[in-house]
Structure formats: C-alpha cells, structure tokens
Image 1 (tube, helix red, strand yellow):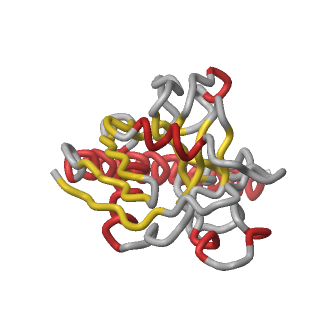
Image 2: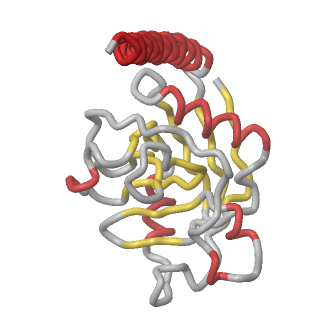
Length: 201
C-alpha cells in the first residue's frame, strides 16, 4: 500500500510539474507573439502580379504569427514566381504554394513549408479584400504558406480560418484575377503570377 501511495504521489508531482511547464511555455509563447506583433506593426506589402499590384496591410494585434510569417517569407522571396492557382468568383483567389512554380498543375495546392504554425482564429469577418490563411485539415498546426484574398463576403469562413490582413488597394486586380477563365479545378487557364512582394512601412 505504501509503495502504491508513493507511486501515486510521484505521478501527481510529475503531473503538477508538467502543468507548470505548460503554463511557462504558454507565457513564453505569449510574450514572444507580443514581440512579433510589435516587430511587424505598421508593415505593409505590395503584391506585384502580372495583372497589377495589390497592396495589403496586416493585423499583427489579431494574428502576430501569421503576419510575421507572411512578411518574412515575402522578404525572403519565397512567394516570387508562385501563382494564384485557385480562383472562384464570388469566393476568393488563393496563392502562395511553392509547387505552383513548376510545370505540373496537378500538384498545385498541395505544397508548403514543412513546419506549420498554429491557428490564430479571431473575430474579423471574411469580407471583400480580406487576407486570410489557408489551412490543412482540422489540426491545430495547419497553417503553412498558402493564403487567399476574399472576392466577396463568405460568413462560413469566419472563426475557421485566420484573418491576418486586408487589401487596401488593387481590388480591381483581385476582380481581374478571380474572373480569369479557369479549368474544372478552378485553376486559371492563363497564369496569374506573383512576380514579387515588396515589404515596406
């Protein structure tokens, strides 16, 4: 009985320690995310496409990880040469897949970084021009590099995808891209390329 009690006490102690570690990690993460929000505050981006430019602002106070991730990838040239591989009128245009650079349209939409980031669902609605992050499955860590810009209001996405910015200029470019002729997989029949993304304050 005494041995059983000792084992139980050890398990409880380990559990308490684990809870303490989780709380500590959560606090560190919170502090780190706050730092990221300050780091990218006021940053904007100009998405240069072969159909014109789209200027976006970010919401780091709502989605610090997503804002920071997109901005750092843009600065590194990660998105250069990728395409808006999925366009649906009345819905959105989607891009950011590195596999869309190759000549194999069959793999478009399946690429992205090995490491994904946790969702930052918030209360911002998916209205025209909203910049939101695509995700894979329902896992907590499902956000990679693919993003989409809303064409029209789509309430069913609210609280299910992370909004991290909004297009402030170039809505006409979104309109042009979303209305390009497309195949049965909603891929534009003529490329809608991201030539580069300029990050500025």
